[in-house]
Length: 304
Image (cartoon, rainbow, N blue to C red; front, side, top):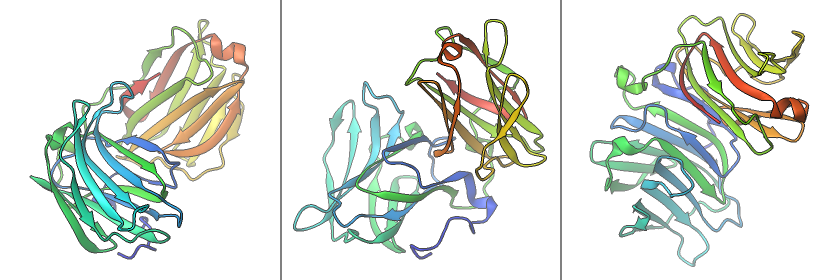
């Protein structure tokens, strides 16, 4: 595959979770089901001419403090006279012995990087050529988060299965049935983020995420309809405001919804892509007490 090709043509049987296109860096996302031998991560993008460095971290969690362990740290550096790649492991807040590979000339050019995870090591290819291999220092099963940072323009991230004929429940963590209710005891305030991760069922009809106050009124709801493939905000009076964006929900695929509370409204992101905002009175946001999720999904994570 050449660097200019898109991820769209990849057969559905290879894909473990939806690809993400043009995420904003720094970008951190969950790897649904975690990592194990037989998974591959594709990273496609461009390194600017003035880039100093970027890094791709396969992390054991996503906390900010304490900093999570990093099983595999991939760090190309371009600001020296001899561009090179540093690979390492962060364990217990301490970096281990670093490994270095020279001759990675990506500055000012596009790239396609494949991370191929085997039983004992990860192999990395760049633009169709094998570049390095790195032996694991932490159990691969501990990795559940991907982080991308630094001077890089990411066009696409894909999570794939090396062997499309390998099926198994281990690809999917245990889920919870809906409808489901999640308490918001302090309401919503500017800067607060709601994260919902779920799996679309085999024959979906709809998915609804509603924010409710103490009287069970819903000042705002988000609804995905699979019959007409639309995504819309729903007002308390049932009025529908369509969201102009590609419909990114697919049967038997994971998705991630992020709602960022800001002064006077909510910003929406789906699978790492910003989809605009809706206006909500700040007082109404502060009086919210419940997040209710219903529809044709299996729920895996709710965080607020």
